[in-house]
Length: 288
Image (spheres, rainbow, N blue to C red):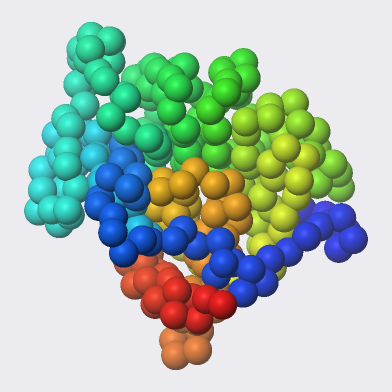
């Protein structure tokens, strides 16, 4: 549990979030809205990668490539034909990465459903040593505590831990969490932390924003993968840090809108993607 004082925090409102949505120009093409590489999925967790990838595209990214094991790649071809794929080598990963060209992507999202094998740590080191912006979620965070030196990088790293994951990476004190997040993001100026809880905290370079919308319908498997996807999809076009708290707000507002016609028991991650699309439609129409 997080202990908070209201006077320590800034929260966003609907109109402010709507203004932070990336603008889509009349004369533009898919390359203008970001080329995302999603590294995730494993034999037993195919869905996490699919949910995240679908949300990345639904939130506006222009191109998505999913790098995963053969079973996930096969499923992507069937259920997410809009995504391109790269089959992840499980035995020759070192050679594959040495020959891989990251320059064709402007954002790397790593972690949903990836698993915690030794290859996961290799991938973590590989992406954090790159000159690409990176979003880390789920299993992509598992080895981060052992590799904190890699956060001293020029390009942005966004991490999206829940409390247990956060405690594996940094010391956690519930009564000083705001101060601690300020200190962490000042120590690592290119780091943005999205600490998921009842009231999600977003920290960047000592700035702190709290998300006060949302409800317990989000307490279900897959909702975190969708959150990573909406962050990635909104961030990819312009790499503006302000889209990160906006994405958190939109994800939570979609759950509030769900309760207008449904119960908190029934929200599935796939429903959440559709609800977020409705919120994006509404915000883009109502933007001042």
